Image (cartoon, rainbow, N blue to C red; front, top):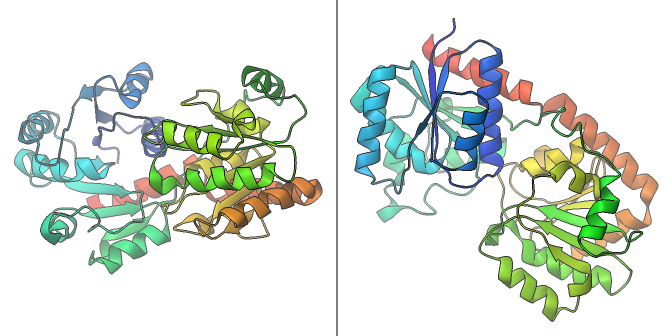
Length: 369
């Protein structure tokens, strides 16, 4: 039975959660489900969803106490009457639950949880348990690690289903190894230099300062270049750190990019130095393109990377361990290729967009039955 679903994701930036939201919308539409999206006007998700032909409504949520946004959403839900409301971010959680209760008490409510830190991390007087223990019929977590955190914090495990993030095998079809030459020239780097890089939002918990430390250690022992792709509050700090460590001539912080496929293809080693992570879709992208990968042993990452089998794991915050792993992969290219090939098989067999969409629909069906 095909039923109308409404989706809320009002993040102003484009990160893994927004890509997963768009993947889900596309998968639902391919399967004949009517749907509607509420997104922040002018945001990348809003523009891309409009461009893809989805019914998209502008909704800006400034805080979890944004009463006006809650009332606007309630009015639209009352008119649209979806069977199910899916909230894709923490900020939309409270607003979505309250709006749906005002609009239609029989509406089923689903929340995606992509981060593996405690629900009490940003909690007013420890009252977040009210938000998480009432009003939501199903939580979809991107990993078992995220599920375990919710259960530890008091969420009923019967409300939780694991739906791993997925990647589209066709996403990087146009990516080409020839892009390496173009990128190295653009960044003013020598053509034959080994290139090591990482991708993500430039925020403290992503661990990029440890990557810069590791880059300096590697650069003292061999010629190598390093690139960080992403935007965020640490941009100036990371550039300063690279200058102080003396690697400015081999370190590039290139901001937000649309040519992620070409950049990943250009890398000899991909590094994911995060200090905490629900799963890490950048890892899935790198493995999809057969990039030898070094990642932190944290959160849901060990559900993807098996150390020494399809990548290398290091302890979070261990700059020396990151440097050692990078050098090991550069010094052993045959082993690096074998790890990357196994990583590609891992992603294609267990972390596809189709698998993510099907598991999400199964969760929807459970609720509506």
